[in-house]
Length: 66
Image (spheres, rainbow, N blue to C red):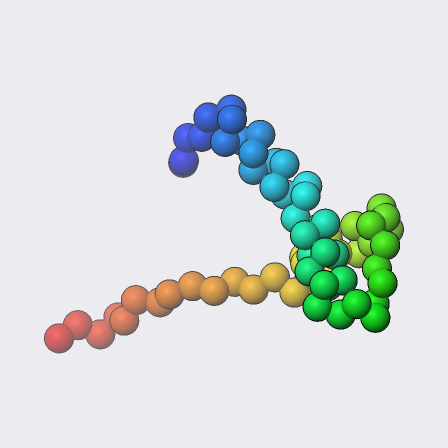
């Protein structure tokens, strides 16, 4: 298990809480016609979209040895 300090923990929680606003800002910047508001409903919607579209990218080791 990885040990983290209190400061790191607080920063990670703050990042997790502010990340949906970054998504809203990015969408508004890329597609100004959307005109998305910074509201609680949109915040929850972005959280749900992120949960469903999350990509799990990993590297598999080659099991064959030479």
